[in-house]
Image (cartoon, rainbow, N blue to C red; front, side, top):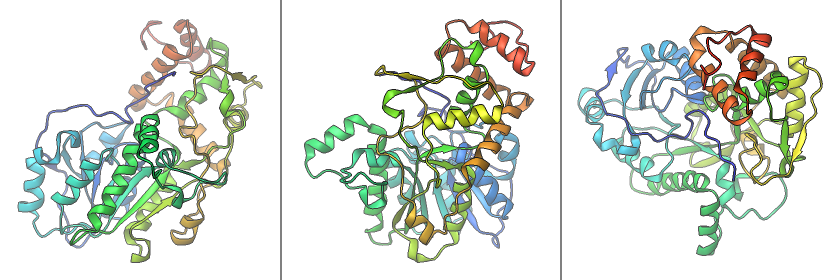
Length: 399
């Protein structure tokens, strides 16, 4: 199986734990939200919207500030550095802040972008017992890949049913450990709610997320693959199994907007899961042709890659596109159009090639292309000079 690790989307590094700092004073008249994560892709978009609405925001993460979030978000929030994989119980400064310094604080919502294990949900709910109005968990459509979908239509929320037989459950788990763990997190939310004083929750199941400041770099890699095709050894390709496969995407800014709506919604949405996705479901080939059109490149032949380890970044699941009827009915879900997202995303990543404050992200993307898509990194260096007027000091600088 071909494996590529891009960005830092699913890392679980161990970091030293430190006490936090207060970048602003909490105003009791404002809504207060605690965010696990909040410095990554969807998290930063959500945090920016919370701040724009004058929410007081407490961020709990490992202190990695992606893209320009060290400047745009960090100075405006209360931040505590904590590695949940080492247990929240070790974050003594955070616990003292919540239970001593602000022991009467009631969080209007907890937004959880970073839980990948059930014990992380359990610890968060136990630590914040009696202090939360609603828990919003950001899940994934990967949960359906460990479930027993019994029809060929769009995947609905009720399709998240594990197989009855334990051997089948174990088989699905082995095939998709990530999907299994995300579903375990959802199950833990349900279990904890049914205990005395349980917290109402809302789960948002997301397909492949696209938008600006994506720290998985998937869109940006495809965009550069199209733009620099003449300088990259590997032909533009799509795996055979995805040749005609429609894909569900969701726009990060749309997700951030609906999260704010969920914070203030009535109890009719509580203890439910919602699929969020665009109305359009392009194939990977259609996506690549759209990039060619907007980038105004010559038409590039797309090869069918029949190998088992064929390179691809979309789609990330096997269960197919999502049904969003429920979200439209109860969350007033109105996703941005595919063409508007294409225009905005291409413009953002083209501009990012020249932005000085995006230099680290740009280096990561170029390094990935040189490592996985070409045998001659120096050709990529020439392409960057020809297409973007970016001159690297040394041909191996980005490796």
